Image 1 (cartoon, rainbow, N blue to C red):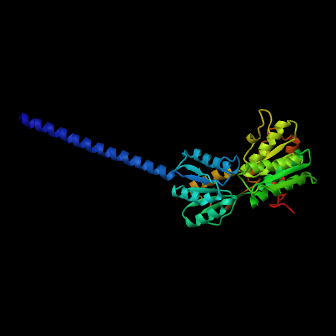
Image 2 (tube, helix red, strand yellow):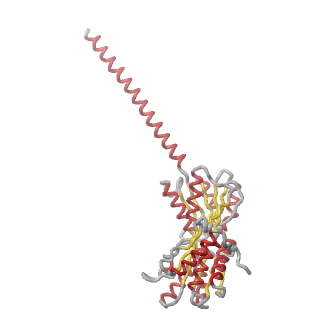
Amino acid sequence: MKKRKFGLVLSSVLAASAILGACGTKEEEKTKNENENASSGNQEDAFSVAMVTDVGGVDDKSFNQSAWEGVQAFGKEHNLKKGDGGFDYLQSKSDADYDSNLNALLRRDFNLIYGIGFMMEDSISAIAEENPDNHFAIIDAEVKADNVVSVLFKEQEGAFLAGVAAAKMSKSGKIGFVGGVDIPVINRFEAGFFEGAKAVNPDIEITSKYTAAFDKADLGKVTANSMYSSGVDVIFHAAGATGNGVFSEAKERKKKDPNANIWVIGVDADQYEEGKVDGKTNVTLTSMLKGVNTAVVDISNKAKKGEFPGGKTLTYGLAEDGVKLADSRGAIPEDVLKVIDEYKEKIAKGEIKVPEKVKK
């Protein structure tokens, strides 16, 4: 009798253990499946972005840097980390690096790859054709392909305002333009600068010089030295890292003669910091901003949502807030700012059409 009761109790315990064990297994499987699904969902939601710089470098305080700031802003917005599966960049020391850098990012499976600058047009075109299932973006050039979005800016419109500022602020009646490589995008900067300056002072003298480089600060310094020595007192540069030399020359002169009317107009990004001579003195009059960072964030978000504008050319001008002048921090007086605003409004409304090349 005792054995029978013990057997019944033992059977009950074993049965309960089996049931609990089965429940535990099901709960473990459920948790495992939920974790796997969550992990899979995160991978699907992640959208990685990377860029290849041109020879100016990611810290050129200008064009490439603005693009990189856009990539970083997109990464921060979506909680991505720098590196594979998030956001990154590769720097090109010469044009020979373009293809290898683009291919390296392809092998790392980035969802969207940017080529920064006109000089990368051929590389983006060739590699996009070889990789039709990948998405690319080219800044400052046009590539006709369904898997490439081309981004252009109406630099001439923003440069027109820079020309107005330069002519109005010049005391010598002589201003200068320092360009990098002689290509259409830099031609647009030059043309707008000429038109704006002539609009407010038909007698203004404008000296223009192309350095044939975006990464030679020494050439920028030598060119600026020549211009300032000839009486030029305001220089607008559109030369990438070469323009850093323009700032160096201007700061040296201002340091020697604090009363000298010496100014630089920066480009692409707000280059106020580049113009600091000391705690009180700065040679940056203003900067002509290009919304490269804004365009990068905009296009990256579109692509992430499945709305990649492949095959299209997106153009940003004054009307689209794609170009503008940076805050002068008091360097430009109110009466001159009023004139600049009047021209800005006319251009944005289409009342003034700014040419893309200097009229010969």
